[in-house]
Length: 173
Image 1 (cartoon, rainbow, N blue to C red):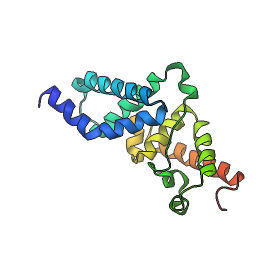
Image 2 (cartoon, rainbow, N blue to C red; image 1 turned 180 degrees about the horizontal axis):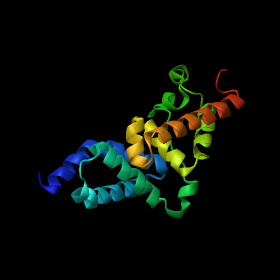
Image 3 (spheres, rainbow, N blue to C red; image 1 turned 60 degrees about the horizontal axis):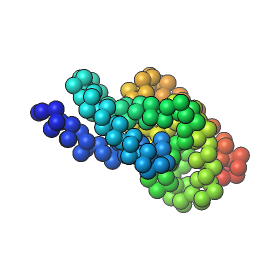
Image 4 (cartoon, one colour; image 1 turned 90 degrees about the vertical axis):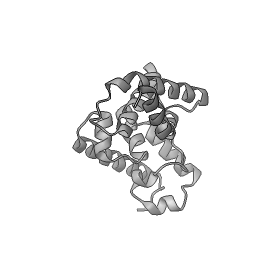
């Protein structure tokens, strides 16, 4: 398969995934589009070097996350992780499916959003990939840390978020 055909196939299969990752890291629609373009450019540039050691989707996530972090430049430490209550798996973060089925009230969601944005850059990346539904192994491959480290970090993030929400009386005890 020619490089152009392979690129078009990869883009067709992963365009929604790329857009979601870009949307996590920037609220401005125009910046999201620019970020998506940068991701596509980086995919094109990296295509010849893709060895198939990881799944294509994992490779795409790695490029999208790294490009998003690079795009935000020096402001990456203060970047906001932008999540939508309708388009994510918050039950993965809170481990409480009943809360999700009741559709979080607006203020509860705002508290969670604020707490997510207080996380470190690495923790934000971990959560964004978890919200995308990646396995711990896949997250480890994307971020470049061990799977056990991913599990530990995500477990600590979940505990932290639950505790913050309990302090605000937003999560039933």
